Amino acid sequence: MNITGIVIAGGKSLRMGTDKALLLYHGKTMLEHAIGIIEPICNEVIISRNGHEFGHLGYRIVPDERPDCGPVMGLYSALKQAVNPVSVVISCDVPNVPSALYRYLLQYNSGDVVQPKSQNSFVEPLIAVYNKSALAGIEQALAASDFKLQNLRKYLNVCEVLIEPSLPFYQDKLFLNVNAPEDYKRIS
Image (cartoon, rainbow, N blue to C red; front, side, top):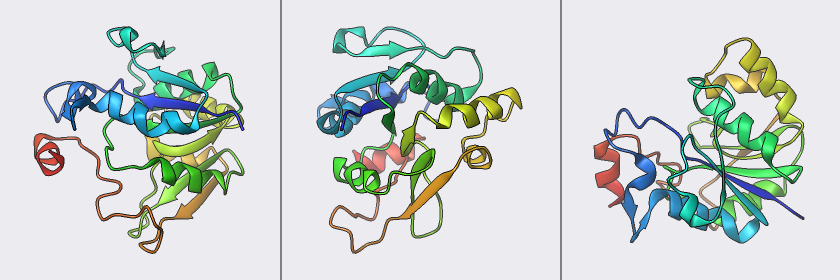
């Protein structure tokens, strides 16, 4: 199966105070680490980012079609540019997500999007499998100026997959999102 990998790396990093994509993690930037997670299962990788400072990495960089719409616009713009009908999506600030999680989610691929659900029932819209069919629903959200990621589920046919501790790739901090300096200290 041909799959596109989309790395969302265009956030403003306000809570972190510095660009999260550039933070070092195990000798690589967080962006390079995220690429390394999805690249083994993809034949195309896209970086969703407003700016071309990562052009030296050799991947296509897709800017937001409209500014100031947040990660929903980044997701939409990259998904629209993906050459494959199926894309795996990762934000650059979730370093503990393994490739095995995506392989697991792909087994459940149906509807517009497959999202993992943690034990506390929180779903992860930027650690997911998106099909091109999601574009129509994301367009509806954007037209309604509904830019909150968690609200996308109102517009999409979502398949939620519970990620249980019994899964071989499971770990306690699987979905740790590095948003602030204290989060970064916990993973460094």
